[in-house]
Image (cartoon, helix red, strand yellow):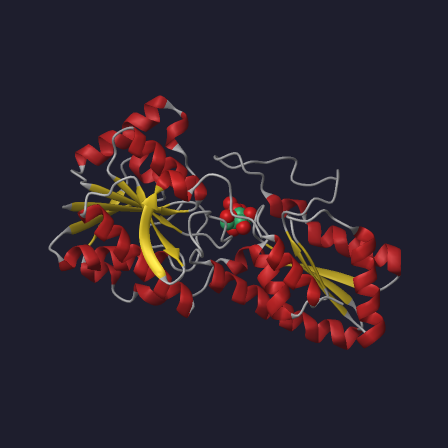
Length: 340
Ligand code: F6P
């Protein structure tokens, strides 16, 4: 068989280990692989590179993706969809493995509906793909955010300030939740909860009174009401570029104005997405990549490799995507137990 591989959407730690796992698992049974560049753009514009076993040497520890990525969606225009199918035929691809989040997997489902032999692998630092317990990228990205919060604790303590850390996550608050929980934030704001300014100010004031400083974690997706921001700039899949709204800076301004406590903010942005994958993400990416090859070899196209509990298995793309997986009330209840 000839396997095609692509990585779409935002990069995250674990993509390279997944590519490595696919190539080596396929090679073990005598199959060859090629990579399409920059997500679905590579299939639309016929951009590819060989993926021999030597090409994936050492990839288990490398961040980013050697295939490049983009947020291209070729299935919005008929002419572009046709080009995708032509490229697959030209390269005699028997199975395409699409590694990506909800958007990339939605495009994969569209390809499957048009007769394409495709299997999905979920990834995203946002951890918001509904069909899988965890996505790779999330643990590594959140470890960076927790490290940032710990560094900010030093400065907040030294200067007796409040500091707001803004983290990524789009409309799911998993990164903020885990950062707040693991880093001991005094208040954590999630897109899943209505913004309550009085409660935030009470947390900040009580933390400053108790020990002289306060730490707040805010997810980029929270809604602070109408204000200037990204001017609605959107990507190919229709998502607003949330970091341009700078909710962390706005929160810091409001805290300082209403409490008189000197307040700063930090937006770590794409720093969260780079760097080597940590242990959990390396292993998960490796397991899912190998599982995707096994699904394709078994002819189980239209499926996606997912993690359920400790088990890696295939489920239909229809089941795996749809509405994003958001933070559940039990997690939110746990989080609020530890706030100031
Ligand atoms: O989906 C992953 C993610 O990092 C989100 O957390 C964030 O909102 C978005 O991508 C940023 O996208 P871009 O890299 O296009 O700025």
